[in-house]
Image (cartoon, rainbow, N blue to C red; front, side):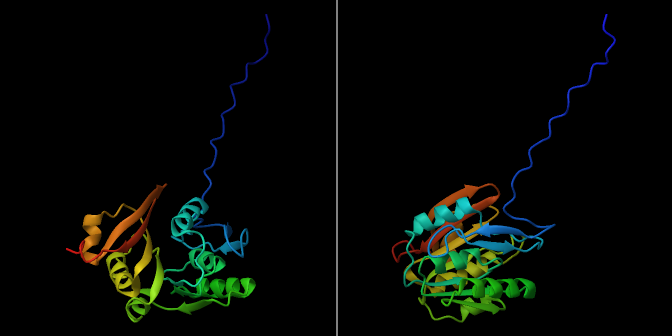
Length: 214
């Protein structure tokens, strides 16, 4: 009879989910997926709560928008890595204002701007919602809103965006939960397209028409 010890089966290692939103450790990367700078990689700093929009969501978003943004006027209110704003500029946007309050992220945005020679972009440190409120009514084609999930900035930023965007323009907004037409109507907005990807609820919004207004 054999006296060899029987080895216990090795425990299988659980695969680690890929995290497109690094919040600690070494800086990560995220890539621009279309336009003049397609496949260019941008640095993602290790900042708590920093959530660059994943590739899949951005691909869907720019499919919704029709890919070509030539001549569009855009604002990225909570820029972070700037991937949404730089993606818009890569696809031909005429102007892209990127607002960010964190000084380290502002420096990174300026580094990326220089790397890409992104002459259509303007990086500014400051309160993006306050800046949005100062823009002329109907002066924008597209507003990106991706505030910190736990912030109370959703209603103020969407209210400001609704005033700044032109009649046929768009407001793109990411949130931890779905916003319905009923919730958006008091802000003058309605859902045009919607996608859930993991913890992210992505909304492409448009202005209510006069007939739809409450």
